[in-house]
Image (cartoon, rainbow, N blue to C red; front, top):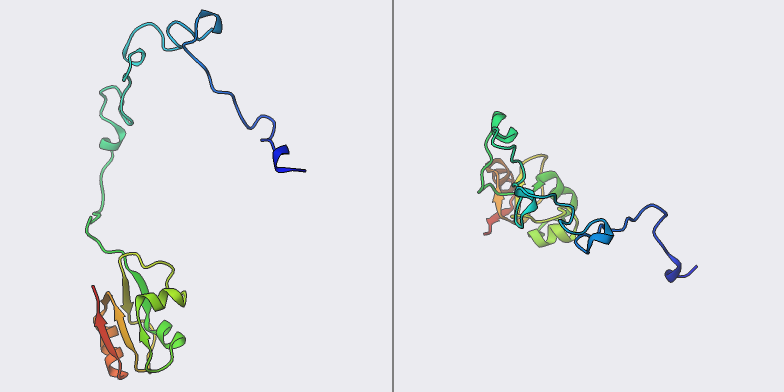
Length: 148
C-alpha cells in the first residue's frame, strides 16, 4: 500500500451542492433560495440566537455569578513540591519549574501556596505568593522574591 492509494471510507465524504449554474442543473435561477424575502437577498438572514423578535433564550434565563476580566490565571506550586524536587540552597524560578515539569504551562505566572512542609533554605522567585507560604520559606532560612 502506498500513500497515493489512501482514500476516505465509502460514504465519509459528500459532494458539495453547486447552485446557480443554469436551469438544467435543477439548482439554477434562484439558486435554491426561493423567490423573495430576507434569506433570498445577499447579506440576508439573522444573527445567531435571533428568535424572530421574541425575547431570546439567552436573555430570558437568569444570570448568576461574576466573572472578572482582570483575574490572573496562575500556575499553582505548593511547598511540598519544592521540598521534594529541589536540593538545599537551590534557586527556584518559573523557568526551572517548567523545565522540571512541576508546572505544565506558565499562564500569567506562578503562585506559591503553603500546602506541605519545607525544611530546606531555597531562593524562590515567583509572580505571587500566599502570606503563609512566604512565612514558612523565611522560617526555613530561605528567601522569596516577587517578580513581575
